[in-house]
Image 1 (cartoon, chains in turn orange, green):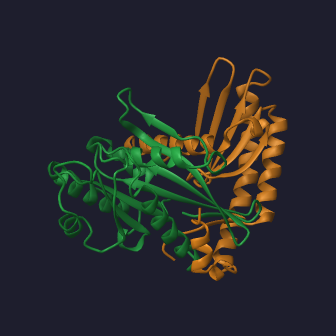
Image 2 (tube, chains in turn green, brown; image 1 turned 135 degrees about the vertical axis):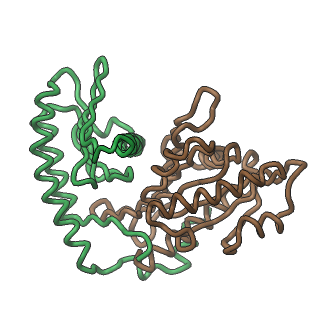
Image 3 (cartoon, one colour; image 1 turned 45 degrees about the vertical axis):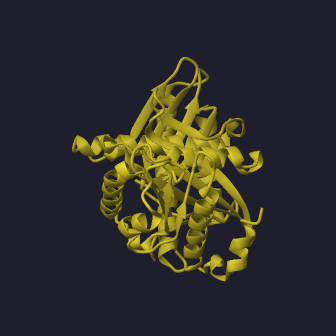
Length: 159
Length: 195
């Protein structure tokens, strides 16, 4: 295998989604995003539909990567949490299991303290799910793309 | 690292445009952005300095359509080309599925091309990748300028492994989509192999 794949099956995505939904409600955040460390959105909850989640995911991942770079230069293992405070909106970002980023976007309807408390709880639940994802990845699954033909690939570029 | 989501039936892949400063990486993405239908693209994000030099990265999400019931999405990134932004370049290569090396065809940029290509190899190695095993294409950009090096010569110096190579004029779009398609195809073919 040249490039490792991140594969998420419906079961795990549903479990991650339910953690995101609960965190969004319990922390009274506007939206909660679960993003892969490489910037791919895995789950979104709350008013995420109003947001450009693709761009947000990529920027958050860039931000976490840059912060990781700073940590490395300071010989710190990793900065697991970040908080950006705005006039109306704030963002809490945390890295879970070195693999996934949990983003809580919130406003004056809640407090940083409550968000942090609920994020901590969600952290534990997500870590357990991520372990299951990793376990599943160890057992070979059927590759649905093994059947792709050259014609399938060419068809994508036919306009 | 390709991300396959069985729940939303999506494949997401990350392509990185690499090359020396001012070779036209951002211009490639801008042309793709301008010529892609609105429903097939997301917002293009450029984290640039006030003088429009890339500071961290440019980002452009593209949807190519469906393959076997899965939506294929490509996330295009550029790196900052200037030598002193090396720490940022390393970060952007994390999780890469395919690389396009954009070379500046001008005679006076030959040294910068070589230096950037060596830097690409080194940074990939540091992340645990091998350029010779990754989906990879080369674009010789700025073919419209007067002092360009012949393609054969560029190829000899910059493409010793004979990967697909394209002549480009990114400002007018020459070769831009050919380059992208060749790279995307390689990435999807890799996916077929399982990985």
